[in-house]
Amino acid sequence: MMSLYLSMAAFALAASISPGPVNLVSLSAGARHGLRVAMGHVAGATLGFTLLLVLIGLGLHQVLVLLPWLTATIQWAGVAFLLYLAFRLAVDNGALNSAEGGAVASFTGGALMQWLNPKAWLAAIAGMGAFAADGDIGLVVQFAAIYCVVCYLSLACWAIAGVCLQPYLQAPHRVRVFNRVLAGLLVASAGYLVLG
Figure 1 (cartoon, rainbow, N blue to C red):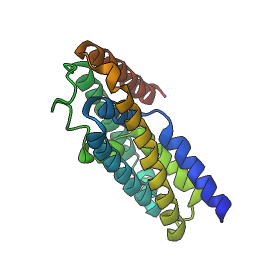
Figure 2: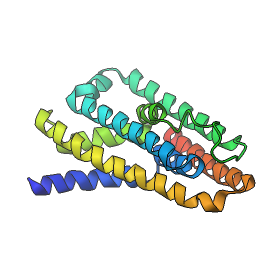
Figure 3: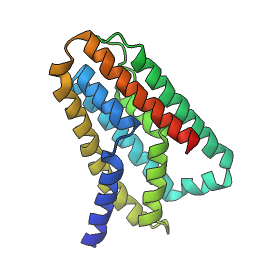
C-alpha cells in the first residue's frame, strides 16, 4: 500500500509543482500582496482542486464524456479566464500591496481558477484514471487527501518564491515588467490550450 501512496504523491507533486496558471498567480500574489493574501489564494486553489478531483473520481468524467459540448465550454471558459488574468496583469500599475488585483489573489479566486483551469481538469482526469479508475470510493478519498496536502505545499512554494522576490520588486516599473512577463506566460498557456 505504501508504494501506491508514494506513486499518488509523486503524481500529485509533478502535476502541482509544475508551472501553470494557478502557480503563476500564486507567485504573483506572494510578490504583490505578501504571504498572508497569497496563502488565502493557495488554500482556495487547493480546496477547489480537491473538490474537482473528488467529483471526477465519483463520476463527473462520465458526464463530460456524455456531454462533449460541456468539455468544450469548460475549455473555452478556461482560455477566456487566462486571457482575463493576463490582461489584468498587463495593465497593472505596479504598486505593491494595492487593493487592485486582490479579487484573483483570494480564497474564492483561487478556487474558481481551478475550475476554469484546463491543467487542473487534465490532472484530475489523468490522476483518477491512473489511481481510482474503478470508482472505488476509498481510493478516491485517499488519493484526494494525498493530493490536497501535496497541492497545498506545492502552491505554497510558489507563493513563498513570490514573497522572496518582493525585495527586488520595490520599484513600480520592476513590478510592471514582472507582471507583463507573467501575463505573457498566461497568454502562452492559453495559446497552448487553443492550439494543442
